[in-house]
Image 1 (spheres, one colour):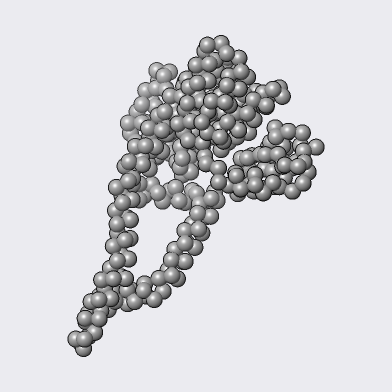
Image 2 (image 1 turned 120 degrees about the vertical axis):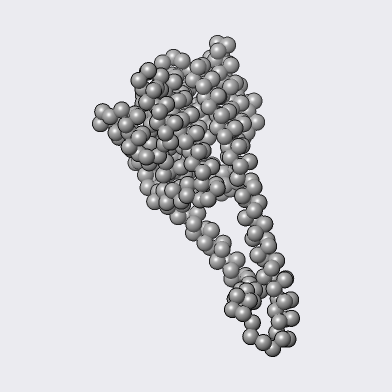
Length: 351
């Protein structure tokens, strides 16, 4: 029986790695899922039951993520091929040869093998969460169940194009604040390493007591020049520790809530999360996903854990029999315009 290396995420959000024996990658994914581990990457160990293939692990470490442009290209191509009557397996085989991204081609080949083993397209996509998001898998599953796979791929293509446009606009909006922060950091280093030491030598010849603010500046400059390496190590350690903390559930929730309170950019993050909420919820609802399931998917797709928790709380309110408008208003997260549109949508049956 072949051995597979896997990388997965626990319910607490911790990333774990290991090896498992199984008949196929799908069987290993099923076993991990039964153990409440979400598989992120599964690959067969070279040479059968030996140790992990070091070169394969290195390739996975340096392998780039699938760009959104490539995923949009694949989605649009699948909609076109299926509309033209091309069988699903044949369409996937053609995409394996034509997609420009190596990681996407590997994932599609694995999806094709999963379908050949008797499982569904959504089951195959679910094995590669680093390539296909939860909303992608969920909508494909609904499309397979309803026999509307072509329409679902069309909507997914439009959804991904809007997501790309949102990301591009966000990067453009954040570019200026980032340049300002970088300029301030560079100016701080130049002042403390070059400028202030020259003035300190000039002031020392006066033989007078300098004002306290001036002495503080000279002291900071002296510390930076003498222990700058220590300061650099501290910054790197703090950055690494912050990244590790953010990877935990509690840390991610605190970080995402703090981001929304930042001056200037906090409003950008807030509007980005709201845009993702409305767009994703509209896409899932229009595709036939039940409201409760749709809110579950949306809570993980908004890109902000703090906002996602509020969306998940809305789902719990609807499960108790409350309306979408009342649960949204009770969360205190959405602006008046969004609440009014939700209320009108519920009254007219066109949320």
